[in-house]
Structures are given as structure tokens and as C-alpha cells.
Image 1 (tube, rainbow, N blue to C red):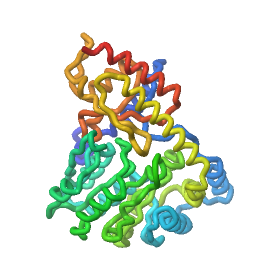
Image 2: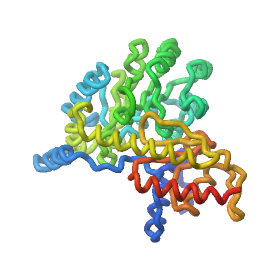
Image 3: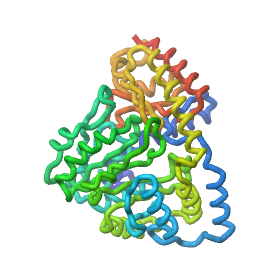
Image 4: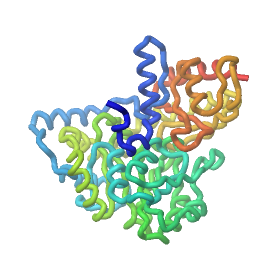
Length: 402
């Protein structure tokens, strides 16, 4: 059967670059190559034991039948309490929809609000799947470039200039994937001042890295009262509790949107897995300030960040900064464009990544996938020893480019 049977909708979107590089790394490892994978976006920690025990209890108690489409009421209530406890946000359970990961929560939102030609503003660089989720929903991505000198933060005047009659939503992410930057309260207040002038514009705040922050405390964009009623918060348990494989995310927003997302989800996945929901319940009920697990994980990430930043500074031509959250570095490598080792010429960030995969056996992700072709994403969700070895290999391989 010919490829022509595949819909234009699917042909218009790309494979996730992070998943593609992870796949390539696994294939090369299977062939016996010693690949250090710095492309993957998941903690290298295991799910906490009490969370795993809650899942076992769910199995033993036969919590294995179809769940409600929007998730168990007990988990909706726990998320509602968590939002009040951690973020000072009031979202009743009926305004919360639990999904198969935060990625599905985002897809639910955009499939529920977008018609062909509607525009969604995002700051570039952005998480690799944002643009394709919006395209899949029939929307148009309006990417606003930022720069490394200002830690990739969007200025309010640039946001204001991009809003027009076709603008349906603004997608916000802090702490950020891929940059690790964190907006200050003052910077978010400036954005809120712009957004409040457009009460029909939906603000989508992706806060999946909420607890992986190195200084201060996370502040939700929804906590600004002037835009609370037009804001939907997207979060989950994947990153902060090392539960990527459990596939539990959620949205908390206006009631009309929660109803729309529930209606949509009821037709193409129904509710998320019952066992995963009970595991997530245990995780969410534990206040982060009382969680030794979160403290240990964030401390480890901070130590790795510090090491990586210092090692990168020793490599000529790479421009970097100090990320304030998440577990990524997004350095500018454009000074290597046009250089060659006699066999391979580096034309762009994709070539740069493929060169390092071939010559150094280190996997990174091209910045092209994140909307910034000057940069690459490095995940430091791996051990200190592997980071040191990876940086040594990268430095050696780049010395051969002239």
C-alpha cells in the first residue's frame, strides 16, 4: 500500500527530535557502541518506593476497571488541594482533567480551542512538541525569537506586538524546556499586564518542571489575579517524581475548557490508567517541602548543572549561561558553523549533533527542533561521571574542526 494513504495532517508534522535522537542512541548502543545519551528528557532517578507501593495496592485492591473520563474524583480533589497548597490557586475538582501525560493535556486543550487559521503565540526556543501539537489541531504557530544574552526570556512589548484578531492562545513555559530559564515574578507580572487586555485570549501555562528549580520557589502565571480566569495550568508527575512511564498529566482551567477536554478525551482515549492514577495520588499528596526525594534529586541536578557549565566554558566557541531550573543547557554553537574536519562540514546545529554522535559517541538534540537553529540541547539527567566523560569527548572532537 502506498504512503499516499497517510493523511496530510500526519505528513505536516515531524517526528519528535528528542525521541528520534533517543531512538538513534538506542540503536547504536544495540550495535555495541559506547553512546552517552544527553538527549533524553527524563530524570535518571527511579519512582519513589511509596508511590510504587501505592500502585501495588491498587492492583491488589482490584482498582483495575474503567475510570471516569476526567480521572478519579479522589485524584481530582488531591490535585485541587495541591494547587492551593503549592501555588495558592483555587481550581475545584470539576475544573481539572487528568490525562495520559501532560502532552495529552496540551493536545486536548489545543484540539478543543483551535480552528484552521487560529494563531498561538509561543516564545522560541520552545519544547519540541509544542509546534506540532498546534499544527495537528489546525492552528498556526507564531514563534517569537529570544536570545541567549537575555536568558531566552520574552519581553512584554514583543508579546504585545504579536497579538492580533487571529490570536487564540499564548503558550508559556517556566521553568523552561529546552533552556532551563525561570521567569521572575516581575517578568511574569509584565506579561500579565499585556495579557489582561485580551480576556478572550487563553493563556496556557506549562509548569511540568515546577519543583526542579534551584533558587527560590516556583510561581505560577495563573497566580496573577488579573489573568486567572483566562489561564489554564498544565502539569503532571513525570519530571518531579520521576514517573515518566506512568503517563499522568493534568490541566486545571476554566470550566468550559475542562468540559471540552473531557468530551474530547472521552472519544479517543477515555480516562488514564487506574493504577497510574493511584500512584500519582500518593505522589501529589506529599508536600514538596517535606519530600526528601525531591530535595535529593534537585540537589543532584544542581551539582550536575554546575559541572556542565564549567566544562562547557573550557570549550572554545560555545556560548552558554547558567540555567535556573529543569535539567537542560541550551548553548549557542553557531561559531562552529562552516568548520570542517576534512571529512565533515558543519553547516548547522543538526550537522553539529550528528558530527558529535559520529565522532564522539555523544547524543545531543539540535536546536532546530526547538525553534532556535543556533543552539543544541544538552540534558544533564545523567551521572556526574558520564557528564565528565561526555564533555571530554566533545572537547576532543571539536578540536578537529577548523
